[in-house]
Image 1 (cartoon, rainbow, N blue to C red):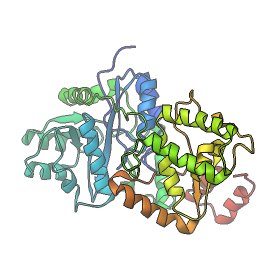
Image 2: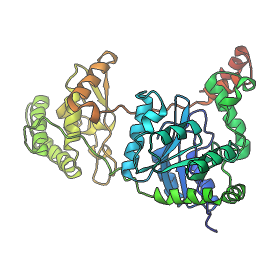
Image 3: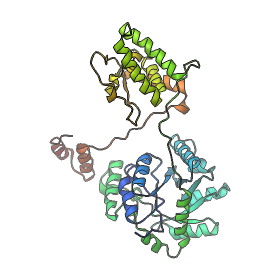
Image 4: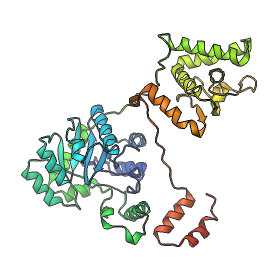
Length: 417
């Protein structure tokens, strides 16, 4: 397959919620099929699909380019990371948008670093960047179906380099209808009433490199700059494996020795005495926990679990006598003949998964304790993405087509989910 001389730098997946109409895997497959060597993912104000994107890009032999489409207070731009420092800046910019720190987008990107690229078709933002005297790595984004000539003229007048994109929102041209459907669902309106300015152009699909090169035959530098930017954004974002929190309350004692001491104390509390059977089981578990470096993990969880009156550690963690001794779980694994290796073993690559349930009215106090102890800069809540199940999908689609509630209910009540 001939190598394509174009790279899509502005690409939305279904992680641009109710806007993008393509899965990450389908986008990567399309790029591979067209002979492309790189692909960017630039979802709207977020990096939600980043992990899946890196995984899929590598599977299809693509270099993943990391970025986001920043939209704030009527202005927009793409921010692409050149390296780890650029990725960190990108994360900070997205956080600033969600926390509404600035009055406008220029307040957030004015001090962008040399480790990022800014691409924008927003002439107002370009004017503001000009006024700030910070045009480092700034490009005017030329899109075939947008105000291309006007922006190109503005860029030429102000010595701003140009770059070609197609602002992709779906893989195939016909998928525009799915994009429109998603916008109607998002806006809680019918298909016919979706405002035109809420829809992207019908040409916002994953066009081939040859097609883009043909469209920009009068502006080859825009195509060349897309490839140039892609090559400068080549870096491996290595998350460095698992980083466990340190446990601060050991008074300088070795972390594993501290864990063993806490566990032995817990054994005496749970069992009264250390029998040979318990000792053998305890030594076996602690050896694996030590070798895998999970001592702090157990101590942190035990600390949290013991801060509230009632907790319930559940799942395969109940098979651990260490968890039982620390008060994380309340099931005796010796008495019930539970198999520790189902929870943790030397051949397992991922870390142990311990679920601890709290009473609903203690949730806030637990969160406050964690944020106070470890600091907001080291503590975060994990996002969870809910998807439409069959019944809700049918209901939402039927609504945008104007069906009455009675008609919708007649169908959905016969469905299992």
